[in-house]
Image 1 (cartoon, rainbow, N blue to C red):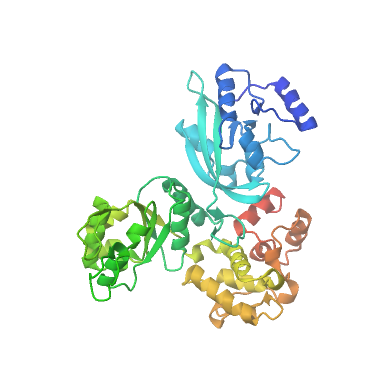
Image 2 (tube, rainbow, N blue to C red):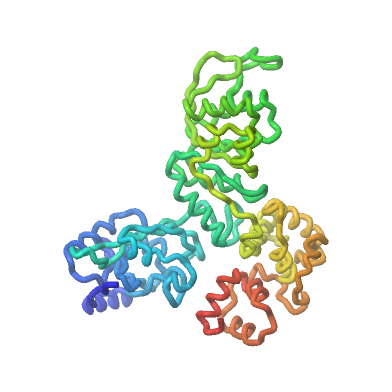
Length: 471
C-alpha cells in the first residue's frame, strides 16, 4: 500500500495544538502534505455536519473535522497522528487482525467505498457507529488517503440501557446494520426470527431511523384476528356498516398517515384478507368497510413473522404475489442462544427497567453462568420472565442459582461456588488490567468465568488478554 510522505512541520503544529488545547475553527487539524486537492478536501470536510476524519494508508489519522472532535474527541488529547484502530477500538493491531471487518482493507481492494457497523470506544462508552470509508486516488489511480464518515447509531445501545435495543454480539450487529441500511428508504421490511427475538423493537428502530420518525408508529397484531375484525381494524368502517357500527370509525391505515405500519405475525392474516392487503400495498388506496369513497394511504410497511412464509406460499396458505411485495428487504433476527455474550448486558438492562434505584437487583456470577449456558427457546421474552420470577426470591437483591427455575439449573453447567465469585458482577463493567493479570495468571477461573467477572464477552476478553500478552 502506498505511504504518505512525512510532514515534520505539521507534527510541530500538532504538538503546539496539544500544548495549548486550542482548535482552529476555519479548518480541521491536519498533517497531510500540502496538495491542493487534499487541502480542498479538508476545507470541505470542515463544513460537514457529520463527524469525518482523513486517514493515510498506514491507519494514521491525518485530519479530523469539528463535528468529529466534538462527538468522538477526548478532552486534552488530540487524535492526530494516532492509529485509527487504537482510537476507535483500543486495539494494538488493525481491525482485520483482531477479528473484525476492516473497511480500509476492503476499500483498498475495491478501490471504492466500504461501509460497516462497528462498536467504537467514545467518551460516553462503547457505541454502535456506522462507518463509511472512501479511498482518495492520485492521478495514477493509487490510494493516497481515505475519508471516513462516522454516524452514531441512536436506535440501539452497546451497553446496558433502560429502554430499546441492547447488544454487541456479531449477529445482533449484523441485524442492526441491515436496519441502518434500509431505514432511509421506503422499501417494505420483513423481520424474520423466532418468537421473542424482539421484532417490535427492531421495527421501531427502522421507524426511528427513517424519514418518518416524526409520524406515528402503529402496531397491528395479526394473530387471532378473524377476517371481519382484521378488515375493520385495518380499514375502519362507516356508520351502519354492520350491527353495532353506530358511528364512523377510522382504521389503522388512516391513523398511521405519514408514519410506519407494523404488521406483526403477518403469517396469520386470513387468506381472504391477503388479497385486500395486496391491493392496499400496490395501489396505496383503500375503502372503509361499508364505504364507497376511495381513500389514499400514506405509510411505510414493516412486517414480521416466525412462520416459514416460503413454505406457506408453496402449499397455498400464503399468496405468492403478496409475499414478494412484503419481502423486499428481509432481516433475520438472531435467537438469544446465538448471542449469549449479550446476556449479561441484557440481564442488567431488564433489571434496570424493573427496579428502583433503592431496590436495584443484581445477579451473582454463578447464576449468570447458568443464564448464559441455557438455550432460551423463548428468547428475550423468556429471559425477562425468568428474571421477573427470580427477583421475587432475591430478598437481599442478589439473584443466585437457587433462585432460578429448575429447568435452567438442569443444564448441568459446572460453576464455581458462589462464595469465591464476586457478589455483583454486572455492576463491574471493567476490571483494571492489574486485576485481570492477577486472575488470569492464577488460573483459578475459566475464561468464561473471567468474562462474566469483568462484564465482557469471551471474544472481547480474548482480545484484552492478547493485548496484555496473556492470551
